[in-house]
View 1 (cartoon, rainbow, N blue to C red):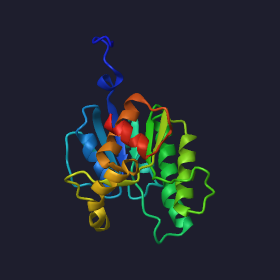
View 2 (view 1 turned 135 degrees about the horizontal axis):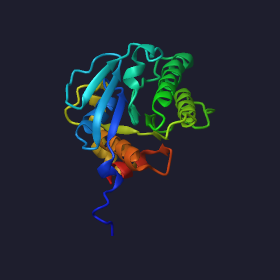
View 3 (view 1 turned 120 degrees about the vertical axis):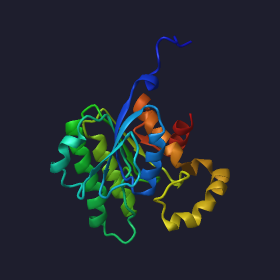
View 4 (view 1 turned 90 degrees about the horizontal axis):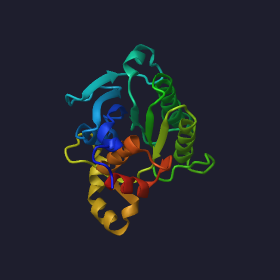
Length: 232
């Protein structure tokens, strides 16, 4: 039995968080959940364009080019977690273009954070079927796998790669593409017949928060890991 005078880590540790991708569906969903969590002390949104919501926990750092961070270095110091939710679809992009956005930009940003905040936990949202070998036929999966592998070599305290599949948006989200809205009705069906292939964005966010607070035995979290950790 736990001694009530000795609180668990997640009752005492506070997270000062850098979050990217808030103007996209995944990042916004994670943000909305983080704003409600008592362990999240402050959130710095690093974004290319302003996010319209205001909150007492929230501040913003506008960065037009994530490959040029010299002007904002001071603003990126003093944080112990980063939830990197920024990303783009590979549809219509060459491998070189997709690599620049998904690998080069992510690694440049992460390297800067690692140098400024060595005790940081870095949570990276990739996707189901990401290719850790970097040698498969699917271009986006190879590039994502390359990014995951490179991130795990950086001197962060912890790196966790989250590989969600189909996700249900959080109620009240604004940044939801019309293509998602057209297929959102499938979620209850998929959840009923294949629960380990879908997640809610609430589960994704909660899994990221809990991994940051308490750790997780795997560096790569597949959908089943996300759902178990995010629902516990």
